[in-house]
Image 1 (tube, rainbow, N blue to C red):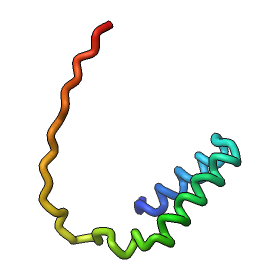
Image 2: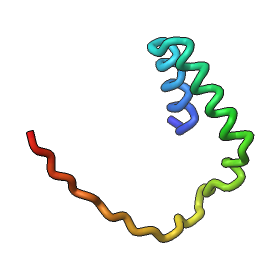
Image 3: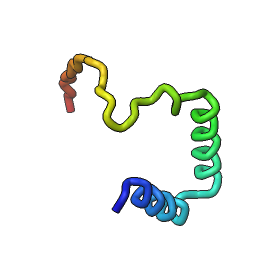
Image 4: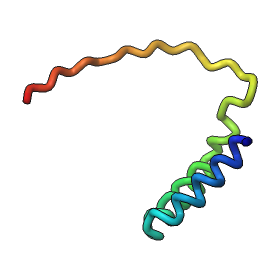
Length: 63
């Protein structure tokens, strides 16, 4: 199964479980990201990810 097919199935299932207001908010947020040009600045298949260093912060919780 292609990734797009999996995403379509996930979206269809989500639409049945989430209130319409939440779906509308998701839709607006996605549209805002598209308008911002984020797709043109994203990595494409075959691109190398830029170097980065991830530092984990361990937080001790007291109960």
